[in-house]
Every structure is written in structure tokens, then in C-alpha cells.
Image (cartoon, rainbow, N blue to C red; front, side, top):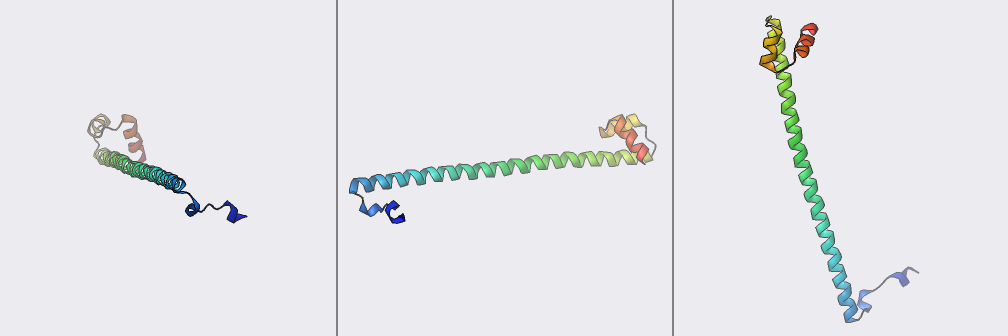
Length: 101
């Protein structure tokens, strides 16, 4: 029966009740430490993810801006080697852009 499996802490002796309370305190403390560590780890992971995403976005934006500059320079007949120096793009990348215009 379910009632037989239920332990009523008020039926404990004083010593048993103190042990019971001590075990509950230990359990609650351990649970709080675990939850706090998890939440701090989650927060740190999100912050690192945002920073990493921001850095990737900046790099991607710079690359797109360099492509835009290269396209304008190509339309003005600037030599490929000069465009490469100004934008940091490789000669092959610039030639591909030139062929796509």
C-alpha cells in the first residue's frame, strides 16, 4: 500500500528527526549549488556566443565592404594588383568579381 511506503517525519524520534532535517538541508544546499553553477554556465555561454557572433559579423561586414570597393575599382579599370593591395582580397577573388560584372 502507498500509505505503508510513506514515512511521516513527525513519527521520528528527536535524533531521527534531526538526521532527517540534516539530510534535507544537505540535499537543498547541493541542489542550490548545482542550479547556480548551471545558470552561471548558461549565462557565460550566451555571453561568449554573442561575442563570437559579433566578431564574425564584423569580419563578414568588412569582407562585404571590401568586395564592394573592389567592384567599384574594377568598374574604374583599376589594376587587379592595386585592388588586391587596397582590399586584402586575393587576385583570384578579384578576377572572379571582374568576370561576374
